[in-house]
Every structure is written in structure tokens, then in C-alpha cells.
Amino acid sequence: MCICKYSISIAKNSGFCFGVKRAIKITLEAAEQYKKIQTIGPLIHNPQMVEKLKANGVNYVSSIDNVKSDSTVIIRSHGITKGAYKDLSDKKVKIIDATCPYVAKTQQFCKELSENGFQVVILGDRNHPEVVALESFVKSKAIIVSSAEELPHANYKKLGIISQTTQTFDKFSDLANKAIAMAKEVHVVNTICNATDIRQQCTLKLAEKSDIMIVIGGKNSSNTKMLAKISSSVVCTHHIETSDELDMKWFEGNHKIGITAGASTPDWIILDIYNKIIERLCGRNLQVADIEEIPGYKEE
Amino acid sequence: MCICKYSISIAKNSGFCFGVKRAIKITLEAAEQYKKIQTIGPLIHNPQMVEKLKANGVNYVSSIDNVKSDSTVIIRSHGITKGAYKDLSDKKVKIIDATCPYVAKTQQFCKELSENGFQVVILGDRNHPEVVALESFVKSKAIIVSSAEELPHANYKKLGIISQTTQTFDKFSDLANKAIAMAKEVHVVNTICNATDIRQQCTLKLAEKSDIMIVIGGKNSSNTKMLAKISSSVVCTHHIETSDELDMKWFEGNHKIGITAGASTPDWIILDIYNKIIERLCGRNLQVADIEEIPGYKEE
Image (tube, rainbow over all chains, first blue to last red; front, side, top):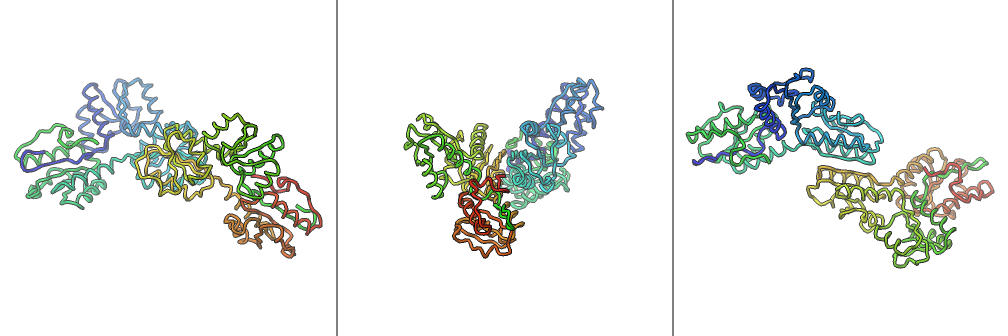
């Protein structure tokens, strides 16, 4: 919010999802306290963020074999397998678990369902680290499917249906429906994270009370393009990647400015654009250090 | 099976379902041992069967208030409410529980699901004694629906979906699908009894190896008409209610005779027709006292 005639708001739940934001926060806090921080795999597939973490002394290793015995190890939001956790424990390194709490809950469901005699079925990409980790929590062998069609025909007694957090509800619902026709007892846990849905809803909500919307994110990013589409259905919308693309003419007569961002956009890119607009329109820079300090922006 | 050129078989799972047959058997055995047998409600809505039970000293009462203190009480296949069971226990009468094991299992699911924090949803007829009894096993209040449309829209945390044993799978599946869209966690237990499906499958199986089929049951009985339809799709079929309708010309050149019966047909009506056919075709009566002694006929 600016004290001049312009008001600038950032849509709630813009950018990274809760689990990734949390893992980055945990990692940066750990970097202040410990040396030689290593993450198992990159925290997020965003080159600027990887660079920023590196500048803070955080490196990633692709395998536990490469973990140094005197390092502090961060488990990223996807989680790791039970076996990998044991290997880390055996190395006696300091472990900081930044597994997304939603993913950790899904791991727990895998464990409990299989312990209670349910054949666990996971909807997801079998090579994705989240799914690989989930599978390790299943006592017997899990069935991993990328769609309902892949569930083998059989007379199951008890099926437990869970999902990788990023799958769509339609695919999950199809799988659950098929399972109900195949088993006497089916326990369905909708473990899909609704970050994408919520991000879209918050974008629409802000667009509806704005004169103009700025959507930030890769021009090829499908989730960002969807945000731009939703926003442009109610108000004039510009989709940009960086502040270089800003054109001050856009804001002539458009005083209520809304900003939103796709799932791979780090907070500082959102902040940079927020500050550039304020600086150019109001002749000053708010020097906001943390996006969470901006009025109206708060994780829901 | 007859030793002459004719062979006569009764389809497995003809007539009454397993739960009703079991309750009648338990009741008739009790009638041999005890006096003043009372059942809570009629064992089955079949006037001939009610008469037969009466002749064996078995009467039914519509309310527990009418149970005499020196009587032996039979709980019929539908089961009774927890409260009614307690009232009977307080009367200190002898209780013989003939609740269908499938219904008893559904009662147990109602209890366990509600104890584990699930909002129990029962698909069924809210006035049917089976559903009234089921409801009493739910710790908190159950939601009873006759179709998916009746499930109130809300954000449920945990839903437990069960069904009256006689509902159709399509309706049950619709309800479960709707529940999955409304709750994070859904436990679906398919408590539908497949007696009808199995009766149809056994009828088809026998029809396929017969020259002629006799389908016994009310002319207006929809489940009997369905058996006749299935049978006539593969072989010449006659739908009759009693042995009076038998026409011996039907069997000329048709030596392999199959018999099946709808869900409301007592065994002795099936037996009467079986014996009449043997008597007239082979000139003798097998005097089979129990349908289960007939070769090929056995509960699956």
C-alpha cells in the first residue's frame, strides 16, 4: 500500500507454495547457525534461488554418498525415503527435516494404511522424489499409477488410495471411483495440495478489485499463463518475467494495482517489481525487506 | 438328478438369500428346543412362510413391549437397534440372535467408523428395520440418504460410507464419488449383499447347460422376471408360480431340465415343483425332505 493516489497489493499465496517457502526459510535460518549446509537435491528448480542459497553457503548433493560427515543436511520439501533417512542417521550428520508437513502427513497415511492391511495405491509420477519417498513408507509393495487406467484389474479386499500432492483432483477422483468398483473396502485420502487452486482464487479475488494486474512468471510457465488468463478475464492484465518489462504508461488512470506470481517465482522477484512500481509512480522505494511485511500479503 | 433319461437340477442360490435361510433354520431349530418362540417382526414377508412358522409355534411381535417374559426371542436377519437389544436383555428373556452375518458386519463398521471420527453416511431406506438398527450403532448422528443427491453439501473432514445390504452398486458408487469430492478422507465399505447378482449368475450358468428352464416366483416379482429374462436369452424358459401351471408337453425332447426361483420363493415351493416334475416324468417321487440334499444344490 502506498500513501499517494496509487494502491499496490500482492495477491495472497503468490509465488512458491507453502512447503517450498517453509523449506527455504528453514534452510536460510540454518545457514546463519551452521556451516557446510547440504540439501539432498536442489530445494527448488529455480536457478536464481539455487544461486542465492549457494551465496549463503548452501549446496546440494544428488546422492547421500556425497554428504560430508561434518555437514548439516537439510531434507527438502519432497521428503526422502526411510532408507535414505537411516543412511543419513548412520553418518551421524546433523539432520534438519524440512519435509513439507502435507507430504509428511501423506507418508504417515502410507505407513498406517499398509499396517492396517490396505493395498496402498499412489497416484503420481513413479520417478518423482516425493513418490519415491512415499513408496518407502508402505509396508508391503505399493501400486503406483499415473492414471486410473493403470490400476490392475483384480478383486482387492482393502485398497488405500493416496496421491502425490501435485496431481489433479479429476485424475484422483477417477482412480478412487475405479477402486470402489474393485474392492470391498476402500480408504481414500485426498492428499492433493490445493496451493494451485488457492493461488488462482486469490489472483481472481485481487483482480476483481484492481484497475490493472501484473502477473509475474515464466512466459512458458503453464501455471503462470493460467493466472494471466484468469486475471485478464476480469481486468486489464500484463504478464511479465522481470521489472525490465514494466511500462509506466500502463498505470495512467489505473490507480489500484494488483500483483500476482506463478509457482516458480521467488519472493525477491515479486518484491523487486513491487518496489520498482512504487519507486517510479511515487518517487520512492519502500525498502521492504520481506514480502510478508507488505500489508495484505499473508500466507492463508 | 433322476436316474431315467431326464436330469433335473436346481440352480444354486435359488430362492431366499443366505441371511433369511439362516434365520429360518435357526428359528425352526429353536422351535424344536423351546416353547413360546417370538420373533421381532416377521422373519420374511411371505404369508406361507409366516403360516408355516406359526404351525411350528413361532409367532411374531411388532414391538418389544409385546414380548412375553417366559418366551424365547429370535432376532431376525435385519437385526435390531442397540436400545432394543438392551430392552430385551432387561426382560431377561432368552435371546437367539439370527442377525444376518453380513448385516452384523455392517453394524460393526458403523460402530468402528464413528468411533474413529468418521461422519457415517448410510445409503438406504431410513424406515427399513435394517437401516434403523444400523443407525443405532453410529456413535454420533448418522446421515441417511436414499441417493447421492441427498448428501448435504459441506466440507467434511472424514466421511464413512456404508450401505443397506439391498441397495444397488450404481447408487452406492454415485454416493461414494460425491463424498470423495466433499471430504479430505473417505472410508468406503461396500456392504451391499451380492445375493441378487449371484442368483442371476447361477441361473444363467444352469440355463446354459439346460434344454429347458423353469423359473419360479410371483408373476409381478421384478427379481423373478429378471431371472426369466436372463434364462430366456439362452434357452426356452417358463415362468410359473406353482406346480399347477406345469405342462408336461414342455419337456418332450427336453431332457436337461433346470429350475431357479426368485428371492421370495420358499424352498418347499421349489421342492414341490421339483418333485412334481420327477413324479410325472419318471413316475416316482424322490421324497426329498431338504432342498440342500438335492445334488448340485448347495449354498455358495
